[in-house]
Image 1 (cartoon, one colour):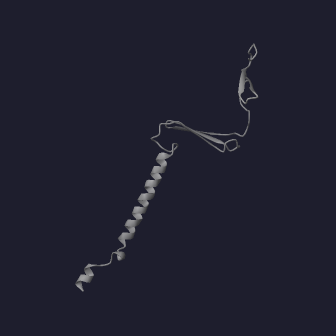
Image 2 (cartoon, helix red, strand yellow):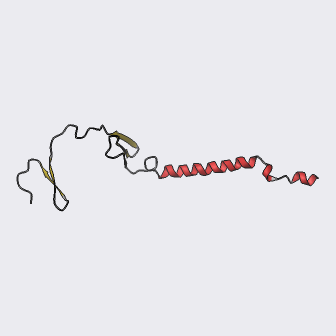
Image 3 (cartoon, helix red, strand yellow):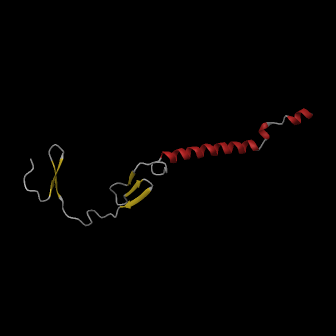
Length: 111
Protein backbone atom coordinates (compact mmCIF):
# COMPACT_ATOMS: atom_id res chain seq x y z
CA UNK A 1 0.00 0.00 0.00
CA UNK A 2 2.80 2.42 0.72
CA UNK A 3 4.14 2.03 -2.80
CA UNK A 4 0.80 2.93 -4.37
CA UNK A 5 0.73 6.20 -2.44
CA UNK A 6 4.14 7.21 -3.82
CA UNK A 7 3.17 6.53 -7.47
CA UNK A 8 0.23 8.84 -7.78
CA UNK A 9 -1.22 9.42 -11.28
CA UNK A 10 0.09 12.48 -13.14
CA UNK A 11 -3.35 13.25 -14.54
CA UNK A 12 -4.60 14.23 -11.08
CA UNK A 13 -2.07 17.07 -10.75
CA UNK A 14 -3.85 20.46 -11.30
CA UNK A 15 -0.55 22.26 -11.93
CA UNK A 16 -0.07 20.44 -15.24
CA UNK A 17 -3.08 22.18 -16.77
CA UNK A 18 -1.77 25.57 -15.60
CA UNK A 19 1.61 24.86 -17.18
CA UNK A 20 -0.11 23.95 -20.45
CA UNK A 21 -2.07 27.26 -20.41
CA UNK A 22 1.14 29.22 -19.85
CA UNK A 23 2.74 27.46 -22.84
CA UNK A 24 -0.25 28.34 -25.05
CA UNK A 25 -0.10 32.01 -23.99
CA UNK A 26 3.65 32.14 -24.72
CA UNK A 27 3.06 30.86 -28.26
CA UNK A 28 0.28 33.45 -28.81
CA UNK A 29 2.49 36.27 -27.50
CA UNK A 30 5.37 35.19 -29.77
CA UNK A 31 3.04 35.16 -32.81
CA UNK A 32 1.78 38.67 -31.98
CA UNK A 33 5.32 40.00 -31.55
CA UNK A 34 6.34 38.58 -34.93
CA UNK A 35 3.28 40.18 -36.55
CA UNK A 36 4.05 43.59 -35.04
CA UNK A 37 7.71 43.36 -36.06
CA UNK A 38 6.78 42.63 -39.68
CA UNK A 39 4.23 45.46 -39.97
CA UNK A 40 6.05 48.54 -41.33
CA UNK A 41 3.60 50.98 -39.72
CA UNK A 42 3.90 49.51 -36.23
CA UNK A 43 7.55 48.50 -36.14
CA UNK A 44 9.70 50.93 -34.17
CA UNK A 45 12.80 49.33 -35.73
CA UNK A 46 11.83 50.10 -39.33
CA UNK A 47 13.69 53.04 -40.85
CA UNK A 48 11.71 52.96 -44.11
CA UNK A 49 9.24 55.66 -45.09
CA UNK A 50 5.75 54.16 -45.53
CA UNK A 51 2.54 55.56 -47.08
CA UNK A 52 -0.79 53.77 -46.60
CA UNK A 53 -3.97 54.84 -48.46
CA UNK A 54 -7.30 53.51 -47.20
CA UNK A 55 -10.60 53.73 -49.15
CA UNK A 56 -8.90 55.24 -52.20
CA UNK A 57 -11.18 57.48 -54.27
CA UNK A 58 -14.01 57.51 -51.71
CA UNK A 59 -15.10 60.43 -49.52
CA UNK A 60 -13.79 58.56 -46.45
CA UNK A 61 -10.28 58.26 -47.94
CA UNK A 62 -7.38 58.55 -45.50
CA UNK A 63 -3.64 58.75 -46.15
CA UNK A 64 -1.20 57.74 -43.40
CA UNK A 65 2.43 58.77 -43.96
CA UNK A 66 5.26 57.49 -41.74
CA UNK A 67 8.61 59.26 -42.15
CA UNK A 68 11.12 57.89 -39.66
CA UNK A 69 9.36 58.02 -36.31
CA UNK A 70 6.84 60.71 -37.31
CA UNK A 71 3.36 59.53 -38.40
CA UNK A 72 0.93 61.96 -40.07
CA UNK A 73 -2.71 61.32 -41.02
CA UNK A 74 -4.53 63.15 -43.78
CA UNK A 75 -8.29 62.79 -44.21
CA UNK A 76 -10.17 63.65 -47.38
CA UNK A 77 -12.56 66.56 -47.13
CA UNK A 78 -14.73 65.21 -49.93
CA UNK A 79 -14.27 68.39 -51.99
CA UNK A 80 -12.67 67.85 -55.38
CA UNK A 81 -10.51 70.53 -56.99
CA UNK A 82 -10.62 72.94 -54.09
CA UNK A 83 -7.67 74.94 -52.87
CA UNK A 84 -5.49 77.86 -53.81
CA UNK A 85 -3.42 77.76 -56.96
CA UNK A 86 -3.28 78.65 -60.60
CA UNK A 87 -3.34 76.79 -63.88
CA UNK A 88 0.15 75.53 -64.68
CA UNK A 89 -0.44 74.07 -68.11
CA UNK A 90 -2.38 71.53 -70.14
CA UNK A 91 -1.96 67.76 -70.44
CA UNK A 92 -2.89 65.88 -73.63
CA UNK A 93 -3.36 62.12 -74.05
CA UNK A 94 -1.90 60.94 -77.34
CA UNK A 95 -3.28 58.11 -79.53
CA UNK A 96 -0.60 55.72 -78.28
CA UNK A 97 -1.70 56.30 -74.65
CA UNK A 98 1.18 58.54 -73.61
CA UNK A 99 0.51 61.87 -71.93
CA UNK A 100 2.19 65.11 -73.00
CA UNK A 101 2.31 68.08 -70.62
CA UNK A 102 2.52 71.58 -72.11
CA UNK A 103 3.39 74.28 -69.58
CA UNK A 104 1.36 77.50 -69.61
CA UNK A 105 2.84 80.42 -71.52
CA UNK A 106 5.24 78.58 -73.82
CA UNK A 107 5.86 80.08 -77.22
CA UNK A 108 6.34 77.48 -79.88
CA UNK A 109 4.70 74.29 -80.91
CA UNK A 110 5.15 70.79 -79.63
CA UNK A 111 7.03 68.51 -82.02
